[in-house]
Length: 216
Image (cartoon, rainbow, N blue to C red; front, side, top):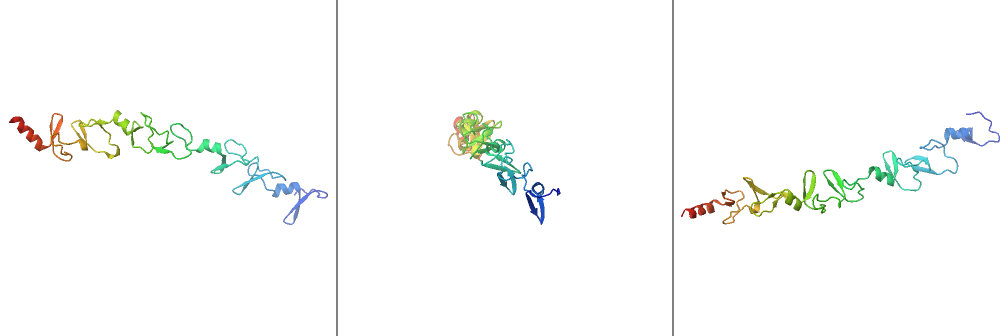
């Protein structure tokens, strides 16, 4: 290639042709996929997915520090050291913003640590518990009932509807299904006719009997 005399000089051969060491290196030597320089004798070489790097060139794509003997994590065509991968790609809790390393819960498509997913009012953990939301904020069943729920006209306890609980509404009054009973004979009035007498509700038979007693 360079036509320099090879007398008393090191040389190499390729396909029955001879080359001085410089020309041989330029044409045929293995090169680093990072810096494109050749590998000299004694240099450390890193190999990954069919590519080769000088030890100093095999670096984290984010911090640019040589990986060396440390563990690394591939992402697309790049490699990252553990801390940088965690910083850039790890799932983070919507509340504390720290990395979720195991477990966790998802609420409204956002990840949370189990210990961070708490009732907005009392801060009790909601993981594995019944809860509902108000204005995009989660509440445990008890707090939601105390703060926002309708009250049963009979037992005065909250009507939350959590867990599919059914209730009856009539003229701005509300009852749990189990509480919607005749005030006189206590038979269930769910799905039946009823008559109101002040704050009380009566089955037709008891209402008739009460009316007759009042007029007797």
